[in-house]
Length: 128
Image 1 (cartoon, rainbow, N blue to C red):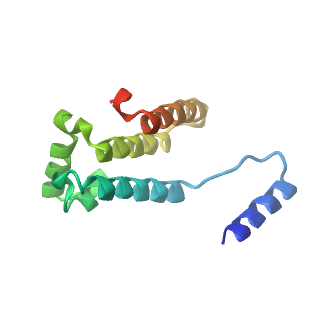
Image 2: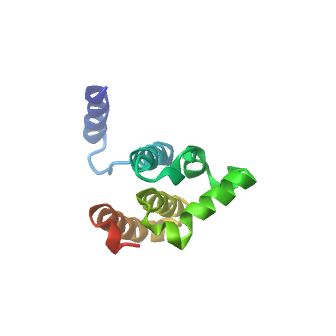
């Protein structure tokens, strides 16, 4: 599969050398959700409050049931800031804000987001 994707990427570069790489938001969001879930699965071994909380972390806030929203809010409460899952979720949410920006602001936001998310992953305690 990777060879095919790389071939498509290379073909695109040959056909349009001035074009940048484009990622669609659906696939980026899928990667974000997978990452949040992987962090949650690893962390729940030491944090039992994360058991049975998969869907609140992955669904859009507007699609949560009242009980899921309440549970997520409890986990995101300042006392829950030590949760690595909460940090991963905040990174995901802050990326979602990027999608709604006008193009003139998007590049600056994305550059800032990449620096912040990179620091958050490297040094989670310094970004809370």
